[in-house]
Length: 422
Ligand code: ADP
Image (cartoon, rainbow, N blue to C red):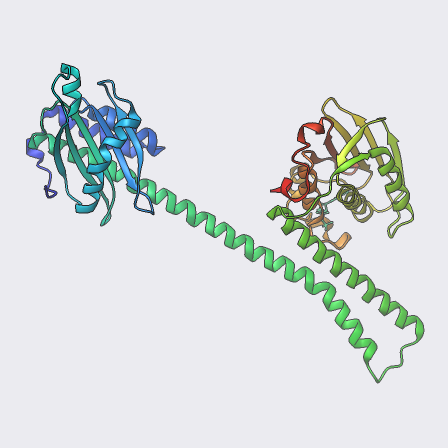
């Protein structure tokens, strides 16, 4: 049956009311699933059916029943969805309304059985733009057949559902455009930040090397040494930056290998403190070990990387301040805090400092950095099923908290290298 224009003259006042109500549902729809349900509920008093199924074609041309409603006669929705499939395939293929009757009653069927086995189908194509995007199939068990004015009504229901699908596809399109735009923006930001951060040490290295190579100047040994030290520092910075960039993208992709083992945290912290005090930056560390005999299941190298980053941040942003490292046992976590007496971090930025490339604008000039360190720390601690966060009072200092789960045996199976970050 070809799609005919709907004849409004044929509609009764109750049907007009239903159409008005369906239009209002579409106008007010927040989510398509409940709007669809509501349309079918509203339409049912003026259009009798036992089952309805809405099919949409998948990419591989198979059918996906995206909505099904069974209003009686003892049939399960799943079974009903399959009954409508054959007619839905035909509707999608010929893009026309199809009315079909099927009778599979056999002798000896009870009255109910013969009624259920005599099926009257009405299939309608759902068109959005010029494209048939689905098929709406109604079933009546035991009749009656569909009269022209009832087909008319079914067509009106289908038209309302088409509006709903069109709306949904627009919403999806807008969401995917928005996601694309965000990704694009992130990529541009990433490239801009990375190229800026890579350029700056490279600029120093190139500048001082070119200066040293000039034939017209005979640099004295002290100046030469000073320039070479700058080149050396900047090369280290470049290499650290590249390591950070690699770590951060591997952590995000879930491919950074981790080697977990049972570790005595007290020994690790003592050794770390000792090493830091003779290391490249000097920070006076006070160690308060408030826990005993508690081992943790960690990747020591990565854990030291986290501690190192937080301590070196204190050296950079809270110069001259001692750092107190404390531990205590919380019910579920082994709790480590690292506290400095520096300038502190504004409360509304405490979460941002863990985001990729984020640096507090006012502290940028205090020290070089890329804003990757704390982002990496967070990813590493997350991979330990732990938490890291900061607290601060402006002008008094910052305190970084690391929580490591005590009941790590429950994660045992997951703590096996690369896969745990997936
Ligand atoms: P980077 O040090 O390379 O900039 P991080 O991710 O390690 O990157 O830190 C992000 C930002 O958090 C820093 O740029 C700084 O603004 C702020 N920050 C981190 N630690 C401290 C601290 N102890 N005191 C004050 N600000 C801090």
